[in-house]
Length: 101
Image (cartoon, rainbow, N blue to C red; front, side, top):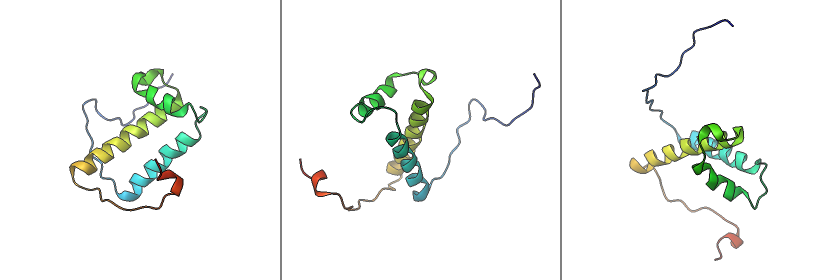
């Protein structure tokens, strides 16, 4: 088998990436899409997602790896946004049945 040389991050690399609101919403949208197209029945999705935290990455399905990776990315974006006071409270419209307890 032939070998080629490719660029790869160093093992100790930490890369800072600036993200704007549009990209943040794109990541959220892809994550929601993955949630919706999951093969799991609707009543099992939450259970499956909670179980991801207990699995080793190498033991996950491709769908689980994708969902987990994007969840980590979104969590880091949100962590930095909170740390840098980049969130604003906004009012949004929701159906009436979602506001009742």
